Image 1 (spheres, rainbow, N blue to C red):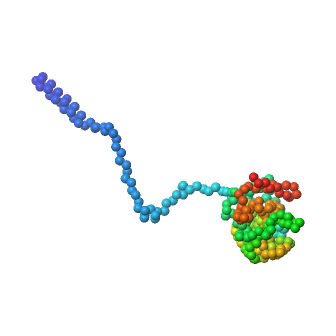
Image 2: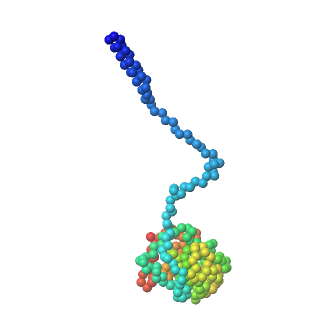
Image 3: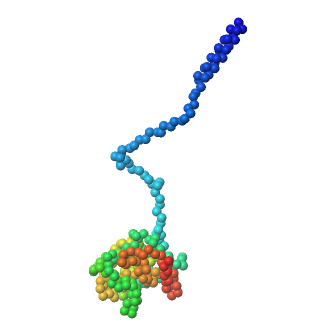
Length: 253
């Protein structure tokens, strides 16, 4: 009996060990990876999709900040005097910095596109010629050089019919000898807006437009800013500093 019982015990132990081994999971020696399926959309479908890439877009830098907040109402003096000092211009600053490189191309338009130069800025016949005379034919349309507000659209001795525009960049531009005005004092305009027709009013001997650029009422040579050959702005920086007796010192930096 003892022998038989021991034999049965040994057989049971062997059976338990066999069952345990059969349940063990074999661990692979190398893992395998199956990539997910790729779905290709047909070109015909892609062409109809509206994809919004707004989150990739960057905001453009602000190259052209207005220097002044312009009012659209002017006193009787402001409506009748061409060379008028601008009290607000240097009220909060000691100098006016005008970096022409930062002015977008669309922010300037040549006042008489395609015109030829009749007379430059400087002394002429013993007198100071404070602007440049431009001409194409007769009664040609003159446009505003920059955005701004019309300060003066009136008659002035010597200038005849004359328009003065005060600009956000701190400048004023003058357009004289006009045969007809197309704007009025207080009008807000943009660069390229038609403002007048060339003429022969005032002290003039031929139909043309007399064009000036002024800083604080003082005329400056337009060629400091404008390339008249290409009828575009120079790419440089100008610094205007007020001096005694209303004069303006100009530096090119």
